[in-house]
Image 1 (cartoon, rainbow, N blue to C red):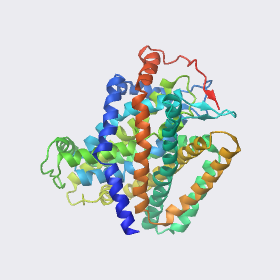
Image 2: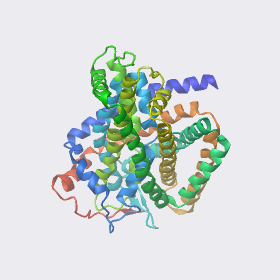
Image 3: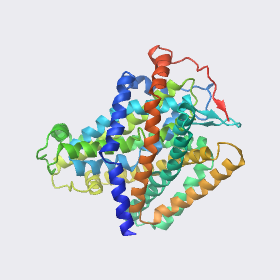
Image 4: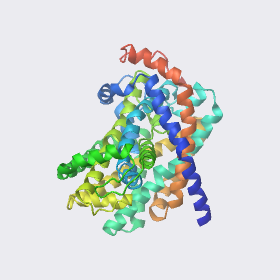
Length: 462
């Protein structure tokens, strides 16, 4: 088993090496230029995310779809993941992570647009969409759509289930001495109570949970930045200089190279915001929206909040804390995060604990929906077979939540990374090869100032 784990780790490192980073970042840059910098419309996008299209087709509100996507995206990667990037790549990794988020907005916009453009409606009125439908209906590549759906269903059990449950049980077990068996049982029960109600139940819980958990964490970060106020200038200098120069970082950090800062910063940014992965468009397709561009803009705010805001705040807190307290261990991501938040007595560790628990729990909810839709697609999207398979998938999902809480998951992390990469490849092909469609829809509604116009095309009924 140890030999197998080593092989899997090597495969994961190879897949998530420079070729994947170049493919993802290259896609971000290409779409940014072709779509005339949709990042400039982020203000409009945020406004639309709080605007309801009550009479439009869809299962949940635009905000509900965004909240579900954010719930699945904002996770432990935004906290421990950023710290790992800083530990391995130095302070400069924070800037590369942030830059990745800025350009990733264009890809998240494109994914959301295609999700609504090619979504279909079941006979009972539910919306189904995502990269599998864009691949099948837009590119007429059914085989690629099947590959994407298969790896989505598999990846969901890794990144979206067992590793998140494991993070929760380890934290609560180590911090408060609670039995991991009890944590697993309670967590599985809570997840069951939510997912049994489908996308509406998940969206309702996420709509309430995401603003609270994100707000609580952001306030904690701002308090820590206030405590480190006199060191923020030096922290910013280290972040900027570390992104472009290879020299001793100072301030408690070990020297790093531009190559390491670039690699780990970009990789962490890409992995945390999931732009290009193809997961968020699955729930974007369920949104009540009058045209594809409106939901595309709303979807793009997910990357903005996740990376441009949350990851950036985390990075600033970590770097400024090390500058203020050079004795902090910078070599391990988890230790760095814990040490930084421990500088805020009592409240700091609590903020970190609540943040990790709520972020991980919400990720389990969001990814449960992604996995179900992948299974439903593979079953043809209709009939008793699809409904039966979804029910079985939910049962297995709940069992996996419990199992993830009580077992060691180093192997699962690497398997999940591989499955995520194999999701991203067909999705990026769809986005790139259908970029002409994306540009045409953008011209039709955004560039012409017709964001309030109704889409004349009704979704195809299965």
